[in-house]
Length: 191
Image (cartoon, rainbow, N blue to C red; front, side, top):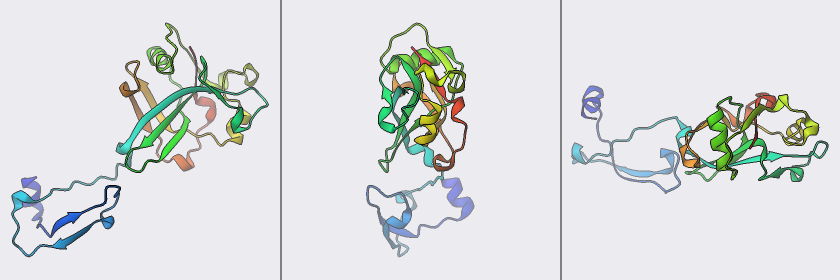
């Protein structure tokens, strides 16, 4: 910090910075100008980032499917031993939640850990791309369901190194609202 302050000749310009607990922007805060009677050792060093992804946490993982031809959102079934892996992430600063797909992974151990997380202790987990499975198998979300309900990816990467949600690493998609990735490469799991 000292080297940055010295290198950039950074002055302390405000005092008494007050921000509401749900602030996401300095414009939400109030402060008063200093009168020059400040001590650099008492200064608050604020490091800002545009990395909004750091505020998201994995809240839930479930397996979901529908019977082919039944494509209303209420036709989705979850909690079984098979289906598309659906994840819910939550922004702990704003409270926003997103639920959606995660991409296929060939990692066998990841599949076993995901099965345990969704409540099925299994020594084997069959992982498939959704497009590899017929819609009439009723073991995944059908193409029609995904189109009708505008299913999207929430994550571009998911790996669970243990059988607890807290041990899962993930990467959010870059732009949830406009992601156009093929739902056919989403992960389907059978425990």
